[in-house]
Length: 223
Ligand SMILES: [Zn+2]
Image (tube, rainbow, N blue to C red; front, side):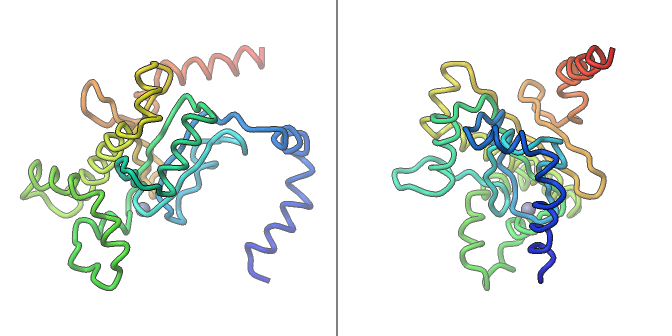
């Protein structure tokens, strides 16, 4: 039995009974706090990183957390974004890139992707980010260029997101917030984009007010 199938049995026997009430509540509907768009990379565990339960994140994953700009034909990302934003009315969208991203390495060196024609074509949605890195850091080393590319790709996909009519409508209404993150697989650090300063900062700093509010909330609960 593969380990993931054995895991289902453990889930049914050990985990489900402990959260039975939550799962029964979730069977009646969902009201996620965010549409969370991240890479398919197996090393990213969204629930663990964000400490969320089932029902809290509506998740879309693909190679390199890409959001194709809105076009007239339908795609999986377009339909999922529309559903999350216009039907579920999520108040937040997070695009979360990550370190050691194999697809982003491919975007930086597309000549190595000849045997993966669909990956190569998919990564054309990141070309503008590569162009920005070429302009900002033409002489930087590979590590620095990759760090910059991960950030610029997130910023680019946030721009693509704004071309989707459902997103544009909610942004105009003022009840949808966009977030750009980069997760560091090795250290567990998550940095978040600040549009005002055009820089990435640790989540604890970027969301200092919200973090303090939640810490205060749990403190008063205990007290
Ligand atoms: Zn990746």
